[in-house]
Length: 244
Image 1 (cartoon, helix red, strand yellow):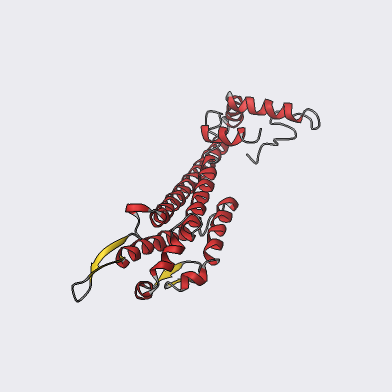
Image 2 (image 1 turned 45 degrees about the horizontal axis):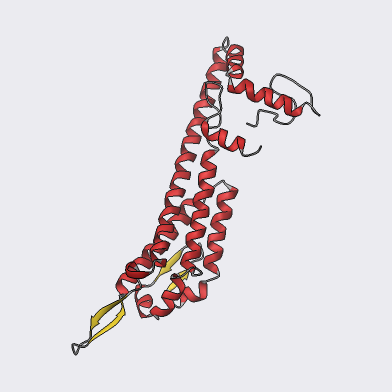
């Protein structure tokens, strides 16, 4: 879209000022009905070298867009996985990982306690999902996604002291690491308090992960904005209408 002067003179000429919007809508209509593509094809059609360069550039752009689309899809997938892992920790009731289970001590006495193995497994999955999302979004070119991921990391940093008490540390690269031994020795009541409830760390992470997913979805909706037939793609129509 950088070749179009959206608010000034149009593709086929025009003046700035009060006629700006009119020129813009004329340009838009020309692209929608294919006139712009036909005009460019007629102009370049007689020159094989120029046509070849245009086709090469078009293929290169499509390849770039395809890779970027895959990247955004992976970010969305990892954000969904983190949200799922966080939600599993916040679940209450009979399906809660923090529900008390019956155990038997060495003397044969039965008692109620937390299933630390199950809790560790759920928290470890959370840590792995968290790191996978950070890894995938590490080199994003989207300011919106970058901001959403930074908000996620800020939420984690604000809980660093509590996490450290449970054997979970924040590394210099912003990834998490968990010590199984230290975690299982931690106070499970504190672990439950940190990971379960509407104001818990896990709940906040779930919300932040949803925002990363949303940001990636929005970026994906802007991809492949112009097609060969001179029309805007359905995805771009969505972002175009967003401005009016």
